[in-house]
Length: 213
Image (cartoon, rainbow, N blue to C red; front, side):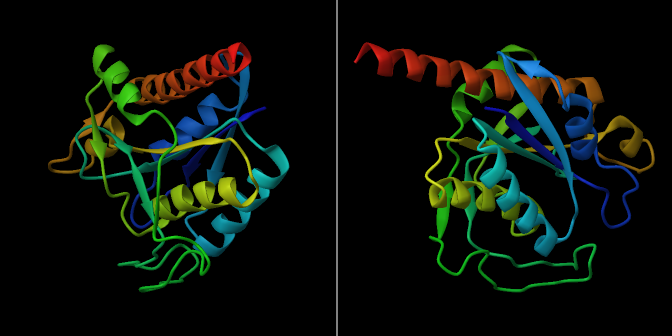
């Protein structure tokens, strides 16, 4: 089964989005024998929900990892919870601005990530990559992708491991601003690869344990 890795196109005043560039850079790469399908999503909630649903139905991935830009973050943020809420402070790239609207009317209030978030945190720090656990992915498109992937995993009866990682500015973005935390692009690539590797290693251990029983 493939790995789905998503990022976003630029939005707002940003001309560059490292999450979309990470998805493009890792598209077609293999980790632990699994092929990465890197997808750059539109910053438009109606189109994005449809794309996530289609990918989950057609690809039935072993892992779904979403990534997005967190401009104020100085570290890699490993998200642990997705909430069933769209509450946009600004319109998306299609001009839509839902406020206090559930992502899915029939969905629960929240889902927890099913990727091994704490194990990922430990491995990132061991690799010298600044990282933290986060308990809010916001109420914009990043949270929407995270929630939609988890909800459709349940809806379709899949065993997909789902997670979301927020990335800081890349160096070229920070260079255009007065003060902005940032990380080099190769560090962000490494962080995403480690996140996927840790998850696939856990899946392999689970399969071995299941066979033994």
